[in-house]
Length: 177
Image 1: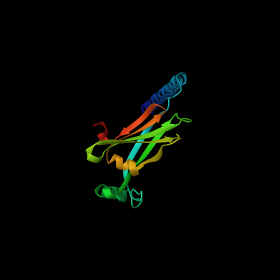
Image 2 (image 1 turned 90 degrees about the vertical axis):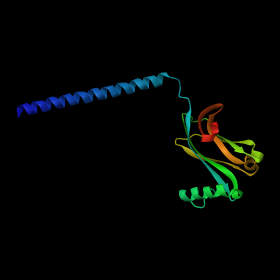
Image 3 (image 1 turned 45 degrees about the horizontal axis):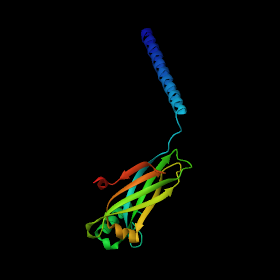
Image 4 (image 1 turned 180 degrees about the vertical axis):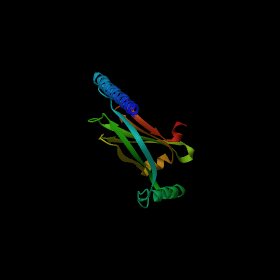
C-alpha cells in the first residue's frame, strides 16, 4: 500500500513538471513571436474574396421568387432556360480585409461572354469599398446595354485591389481557358 502511494506521488510530480515545461515553452514562444512582430515593418493590408455568387436577374430585377435558397436555385435554373426573361446578371461578392483601416479598396469583376456571332466580349464592373472589422457582401450588376453587349456569360474573375496592388482573386473555372 505504501509503495502504491509513493508511486502515485512520483507520477503526479512528473506530470506537474511536464505541465510546467509545456507552459514555459508556450510563454517563451509567444514572447518570441511578439518580438519578431514588433521588429518588423507595419503589416501590409491583406484581404480575401470569400465567396462569389453569380445570378441572373429577371425583367423586374429579381433573382428569386422567395427568400428560400431552394426557390432561388429553381428560379435560376428556370431563367437559364428562358433567356428572354433575363435582363441582367448580378454578382454578390463576400470580401474581407485586415490591416486596411483608412484605405480605400476596390472590388472589381471582369466578365467574359459570347456575343453576337459567337464573338468574345468583355465587361468590367468596379466598386469602391471601405474595410470594416468583419466580412461584407456587396452586389455588382450588369444590366441594359452592357448585358446585351456581353451576351451569354462564359467566365468571370473577381479581384480585391488596394490602389494598383491586387490583394485577392477568385475566378470561375472557365476563366483560365
